[in-house]
Image (tube, rainbow, N blue to C red; front, side, top):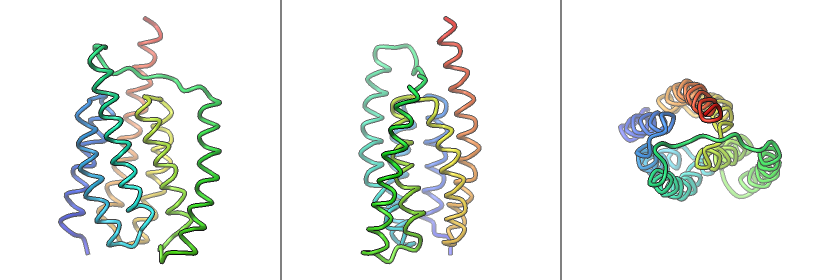
Amino acid sequence: MMSPLEALAVIITMAGIWLTARRRVIGWPCSLLASLLYLVVFAKARLYADSALQIVFCLFLAKGWYDWHRFRQVAPEITVQAAPPLVLLRDLLIGAVCSVALGTALRLWTGDAAPMTDATLSVLSIIGQIWTARRFLACWLLWIMVDSAYVGLFILRDLWLSAGLYAGLVAIAWFGWRSWKESLKNTTTR
């Protein structure tokens, strides 16, 4: 059964991600509120890693909000950067190790409904948050992959509104990638 709390979390999440894709600082506090709402939604669905992930997200979102706000004080707009390939590879390798460790812990110590999937998507989401805060263009390709996988997970857990949200987030991530790519191209040609 869909809850009003999940519906509110969906609306606020869409707003936060859309604003971030448009390089607006206000997207960060919107996403912070959405994470607090989803903490409760995921706990009720027994997706414990995703619920705990919301606490981690809140910390990253607060830091991203601070960093973007500070950057905005010295620059006329939020600029995008290409990440060094070795940084991306390093982060993904660390993510793979952390996913296995977290998935194993969830399998052994919790009743998580999908421990390895939950763990992997949670770890990749943390990496996505870090890359977004650092304004790496590659964050959007990672979000496309992660959000697509979440659609399937949420359908399996009967979180239909959240599955719809994440399908919409795939589209917004595609927009974000195109928008940030164009911004990066314009920055490098100046």
